[in-house]
Image 1 (cartoon, rainbow, N blue to C red):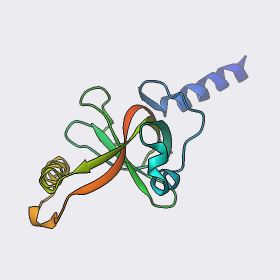
Image 2: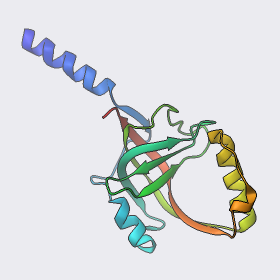
Image 3: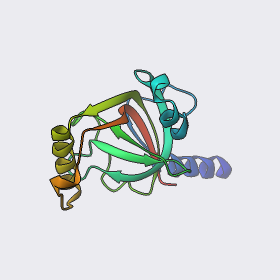
Length: 150
């Protein structure tokens, strides 16, 4: 009986270390971020799952988080405002996230507006002259995530 109580207590502590957000994860295996970025056309429009260390989180609304893989490559998980709110103190934790892989193409003007907004969210200075031209990048439109404390 004591063993059962210890097992239940430990299980409760372990599950409390996980934060589940949005829809439950459906895919079995994460795709390496390196594979996504090496061949993005293969994945655009498809649901993917990634795993990495959280390096940044939107400090205004919790509407995005950046994940970095073990090899140092970064991908942003973006969600619609208020659908999922990533905890603002999640940097340094590990996350598994799932969603649709998307290609984003911005004109210079839109890139400036986005960079300005992101600087504001992160409480940083921004110089519009630092953006010389439009940008193309890839991100995941998140549908669900699990954040762990490890």
